[in-house]
Length: 128
Image 1 (cartoon, rainbow, N blue to C red):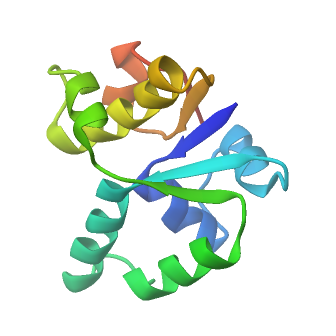
Image 2 (cartoon, rainbow, N blue to C red):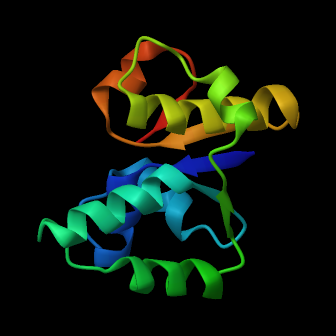
Image 3 (cartoon, rainbow, N blue to C red):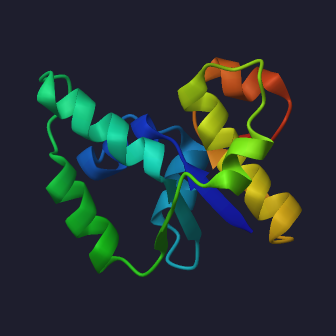
């Protein structure tokens, strides 16, 4: 199973606080496959530039590069064609990434998020 990680989940994971109990278990599991959509990296850069989060993009990237559990998945045509239209664009890209893993790559995928729009969409299972 793959766990697609939302922006707040990776930020709170790095901060060591704020994660829900199930999300914390997944993010700490040394066997977990964690996928970071490129939109998450873009949001981190944006939020840091506006002073809304502590870690910089380079700090997050260093963590991702050092931890073999993480994979960055690009915003590509496969994601675009699977994006649900009933979510805002950022959430839709994250869900579209999970759908690529489920539909194209044949791997069960869940999203690590507390985002109510993603969770209530029912498109992909979420963990928090």
